Length: 209
Image (cartoon, rainbow, N blue to C red; front, side, top):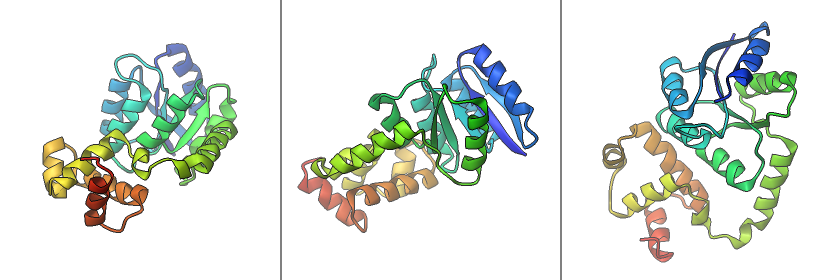
């Protein structure tokens, strides 16, 4: 049974989607959240197999909620389910740690299929989202590597330039040591360097400090 948390600030949407999903033989909606803050709390409390996350919600939006969940639980599998396809939503959501990206115009059956596929380790993206990513990749040659870093990754990179260890960074930012290690790994990959020393050299070379 795939355990699902559904976060959306529209009650009728939650009722409709949850009813459909709960009727599936292999899916169980174990909790519902009406805003991002509640989604973070419920995700960390229940540790569901899949989190369905709306983007535009009161208190805390889906992007911030996704980032906070992934920071504290790197293995979380989050599917964005939204009406928005603009760059200001797609890229930040994926960079925050979302695994899949679906539109609310999708059929309920397609959402269920995305849940099963994401549960199995796949990343399911709407065709329009895939097209945006491919376009960005084609144009990325003109973009400095460090501009691919998220705000949190840049923050950690700057702490690395101060000689801070992973434990130091964990203590200073109040995030788990495992989360810091994930961020550092992402930083090295995005900057195309082999170790922390090379990352620090990159930061100084590009006047990021």
